[in-house]
Amino acid sequence: MKWLRNLSWPLSVLFGWVVLLRNKCYDRGWLSSRAYQVPILCVGNLSIGGSGKTPMVEWLLAHLLPEKKVAVLSRGYRRRSSGFQMATQQSTADQIGDEPLQIARKFPEAKVAVDANRQRGIEKLVSMDSPEVILLDDAFQHRKVRPYRSILLTAWDELYTEEAYLPAGNLRDHRSQARRADLIVVTKCPSGLTGHEKEKICKRLKPAEGQEIVFAYLCYGSPRDERGQSFPLEDLLKQRITVVTGIARPAPLLEYLGSLGVRFEHVSFADHHHFTEKDLRRFQGKNPVLTTEKDAVRLEGKLGRFWVLPVQHCFAPEEEAVMQRFLRQF
Image 1 (cartoon, rainbow, N blue to C red):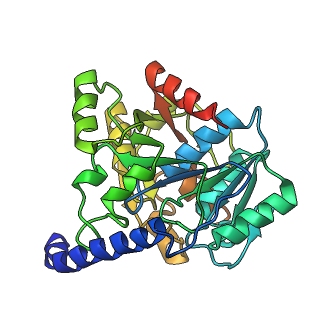
Image 2: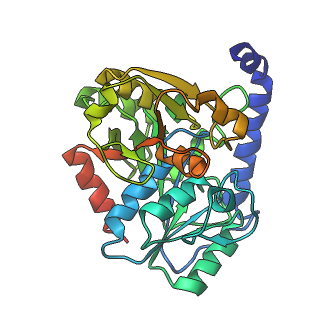
């Protein structure tokens, strides 16, 4: 596939110019955007998939909800419904998308909705629930809404400054748009990242004046079964398991399991994959299945027993202080 991407380089140059022109039209007011009275915090990236947007939304919810009435609005990527949909206890991944369903299950006190038309979605949430803060998930490119603040994510090993535009690379928006972010979070870092290494990354990202950069690493929790019952991590070492993933970048999970000495076979699917009976036959009746939280909401009701490994963003104390200071604006 690499040779095919290399051949598509001229299309990538064209794509870069197109997204740059589109943003210039918004910057100069030729295309309209709208701000809202309710504070809107946008979480997004410049690349396609794999930077950890859902764990970031969950981190924000965990720290805002104790004091704020928070709603989450997502597009609901690859759902099989249309229009505005509010998450309920009966919602499925087909109705609202896997990531919104995951968030709604973990944070029942938050209102979670999906709508490809973000303006309409915001207006409906405001009229239905009067939230004090709205988290706009995966909407950095959605210029029709002007957020109060924006968080831009970029993966440690795939910085947006070093990526090519689609289709040769993974960039879906122009690099120059990073300047619109109030905070840049470098995700999926090694936990022992040194101060010198952070300085080198900051120089590569070249933040705008006033932009802060923080560094996050992934923390994995105790595994649990499909009923939500946790069990010791050591149980994963007792037998060979089958790891099933339908996410953009499973490498960090596989590296983590390998570091623990877990013996596993990996069955990989595309991001947001809808599991079919044929897919299930690939791993049913084999070793115990371990999957991600995002995949679990698409597997429930289709697979009898399976294990889930939760993940979240973690920050060093000095980075945590920056994040907390940022949230005090809301």
